[in-house]
Amino acid sequence: MIVRFHNDFLKQYLKIAPAALALERSIECGLHVGKEWPSPILDIGCGDGIFADILFADRIETGIDPDASEVERAKGLDKYDELIVCFGDDIPKPDGAYNTVFSNSVLEHIPDLMPVLKEVHRLMSDTARFYITIPTDKLERATFIARFLAAIGLREQAKRYGKFYNRFWKHYNVHTLAEWRQMFEQAGFEVEVERPYVPRNISTLYDLLTPLALPALIAKKLFRRWLLLPGLRPLTAPVIETLLAGAVDRAVRDEGECLVYYALRKRPRT
Image 1 (spheres, helix red, strand yellow):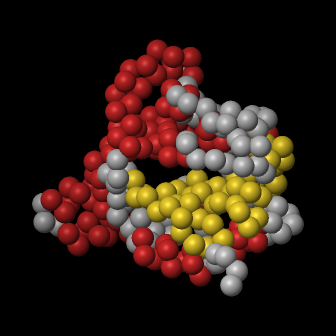
Image 2: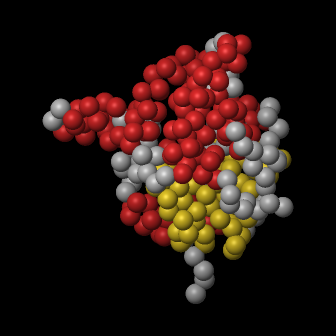
Image 3: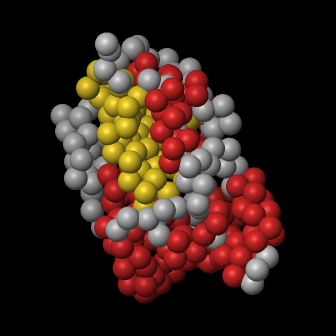
């Protein structure tokens, strides 16, 4: 079966999430549409399951995540046939079990990434695709503070802020395009699609919206939901959607530099 996708990603995200997260995830959803995703499907780092719930119109087979509390939340969405609490380098499934694997804004947070890539390679059928969204080394340079410091000539301070930015967000893997390709090839993949996305201005917009998401982060920790006052969101969501829709459309349509979308396949045996 070929899985079906939803649409109106931004509208759906704004019902439940802060504007910064809705902007980022809606762009990522839009990049996946139009490609064929045959079942069975594996979600690496499924978290609370919201991304899969908004992206897919159908249920998918498997989600894995090492955080048991996040997996428990994902169960409530009833989007997956099964959810497994495990790390990505040791997934209890047989060789070639999946025709599609995806990992959305996850690989950059894994300190020892190569074992995970090799495990994904093991789990993919010979015709499978592995879809990934990850940052490039240019992401931290596009933040508001880094761009401001560079603009006033404080380039060394801008570099230091970039390092702080990656430490704060636990970005262990932030590479150039050439470095990402080399890592994937080492794990046994070949690159079918490499598409940089999100221009610097849109990344800066996301950075400016992030402090406004602090109440949402508190709500997520305390109440297991993103919005402290969800009853107010129907009043504000249409305005936010109007303001952000153009940025989402541009980021999906145009080339960028701050993040990169990959479609990988297994390198043919020789």
